[in-house]
Length: 160
Image 1: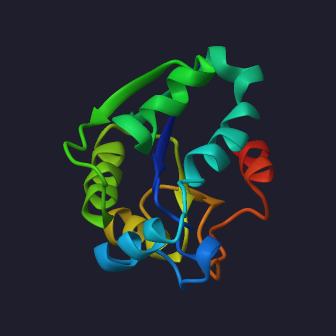
Image 2: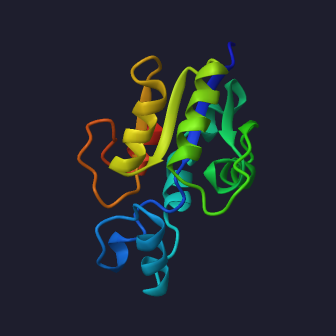
């Protein structure tokens, strides 16, 4: 059986603003306001819903991901074989981390890039890899207008 390489990127702050009546979480000021209003990170949890769908094929899969909440922690929690290919080095992470991580995943030759976020995250992914590798979004943001997203996190995992 051939081992497949799945690229994973999670934007941990995606969707936080919408949960407290803001229009997304784009920018440090909006993120700070979302946190002041009590918003918490939900994208990592939504990503895990998708990743659970991959557990039955886990033996034929290695997940390549960034460190921390951008993928590593979720793989460890689920016991998925993984390899960190990008060290974030800062909290909170930002769009530049997404772009750099996506480029590292492309260089590592992933078969699919699975990412959790909103439309801003989708733009970052496209900036990094354009259409050179297949990408699939786990919906976790406020503004989900891009057709790259599955209808639900579970469906994203099933499709992946």
